[in-house]
Length: 179
Image (cartoon, rainbow, N blue to C red; front, side):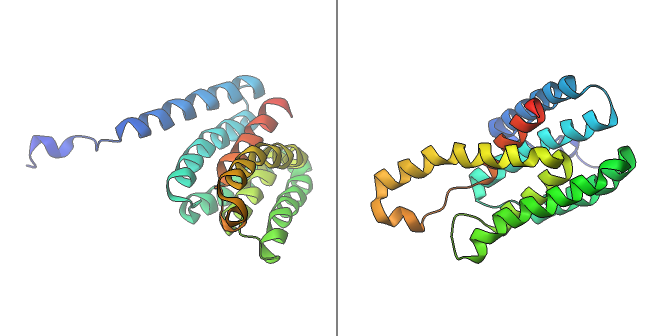
């Protein structure tokens, strides 16, 4: 029989508790807004996932494929099952949002990474046409951070990046609650 302490849960630390509490609170707010429906469950799950992704992006500057890609794989059939009449809207929104973020990357701008592109795809699948609101909010929200970097580092700031995942997440939450 294993020692008694081997059954203990691993310590997640204060940061993990904060992420869990904020994620659960945001998910509850989104669920209240959308109602206890399949659509509400998808939206609330996305809200909680965005908190986790934002924390990871802030800490490690990466949006892990191990999280984003399975989320896409789950959301696409769920959306098709819940509202098959809107599948074309969600698909076009997903590809359109991904393309909007892919273009600066292809142009050689350092500010956007492939993780951001994949996250935008996921957001398009969940938000549909409201993904445009999410991208606009994210772009406006990142502006003060970019200006602060520019003020502090001058021209060198043009080669520095800001994790964009948290800003995309903020935009998505705004879209979930207002769209």
